[in-house]
Figure (cartoon, rainbow, N blue to C red):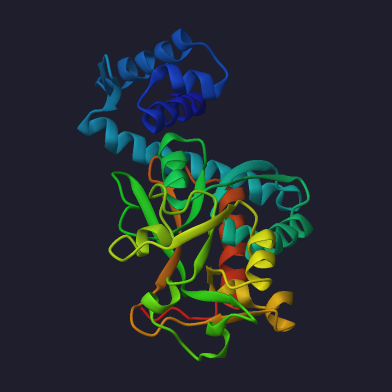
Length: 305
């Protein structure tokens, strides 16, 4: 039994596919199939049920795969203990757009200062798309809004912090003079949407408001700066998480006024997701530690559970 065999074992379980495991491991499909077969012969048991739809772990296979994950995690920790000053490796992280605006840049600077040789690959998407990327293996981990759609077999979800959506209105909007507004009152105004909000449910504010009246979308942009600029110059509104309002130049100058909704809860939970089939690397552990540290200082609404 070799570590390479255990690594391929985990890859096949991760994708439920020998061909995808081979593709992501940069070796041939017959080589992966042969490695798994030899391991099964050595152990005297069948680890995967091979079907036309893919390769799925047997009951014994599930237990052995879990042990293999622990073994490789331990090996990784041993390597890092031996050379803690030069942590290397890559991590693919999917993030919702709001995290890229504030918290994630600070996480990256913190990590690069401590471990200059690691490589963090970021992709920005909506929560449901990130979940799909984590489940398929395109992202190692994801940072999402934990709405009811974020669930699935082998998906681990962990809360980072609680927050809430606010209405952003320009200083000349009639709403700007109010301490709070009802959702109905706010949605009477033209709305500036982020990307494809309210055209399909990718999570986020679309999921939260799916049981209420949809906004009258006047503009769509995939850039927060442009959304805020348009809001600041007219009567259109938009939704933004409270944590994004910290040190925002539009709010500090009074060009935009943040307003809470008074009659319904627009509370959200920002969370971390990963596949339970995905082995946790030392780079991932360092990233999550830095992420949680930044979330503790950036989140305006502290965890209450």
